[in-house]
Length: 247
Image 1 (spheres, one colour):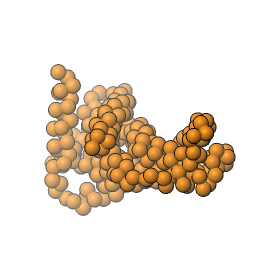
Image 2 (cartoon, helix red, strand yellow):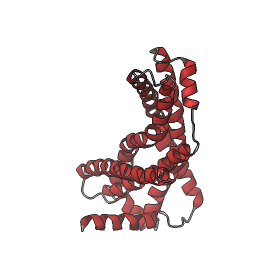
Image 3 (spheres, one colour):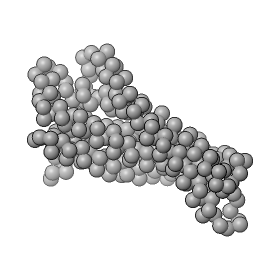
Image 4 (cartoon, one colour):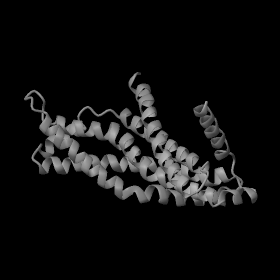
């Protein structure tokens, strides 16, 4: 019965998180801070991973198409589909679950064991909403921008490395990324990103908020946040994929 208990506890926490705030100005300031803390600080790792993954996908695709019946522009097409559909939405969010999720869980967990959350409650502040809502809102706002930047850098990295390795010509690659483009796939990718943003921040906050014990338990909560977020990301990736592709 423990899984049901944890699920119920999570939804009860979310009810407090999305309760109407008393002072919107304070929340707005916190959201701006979290956008910088969660999103802007993640730009370097997003950029580096996206460029190299785009290059790897392109080179593997180029040298994997040995059949003369497969046109070279399929390299650009493969890179675009891989980056847009899976890497920049699902894989990138799994990486961010490790970076952002562990940071959120350890931050809130440390506040719990040092009784800072109890102090907020004594002052009559809705600690769940004050601590968690700005993180969720900031992630929902900034993650789509990180995904868009990742898509651009992934495709550009594929172009640079593919042309440098002489896997394809610039014209063939560009023709491939334009070939048979379907805009609804962008809606699919950004829908996943927004759902994953909510999962990463809310689940990590939940793990940190209910931390008990000392510093060792904060580390355990951080680990649990990454594990549970990653599992839920993969689960919802399957659900959203079925919803979009089975229409």
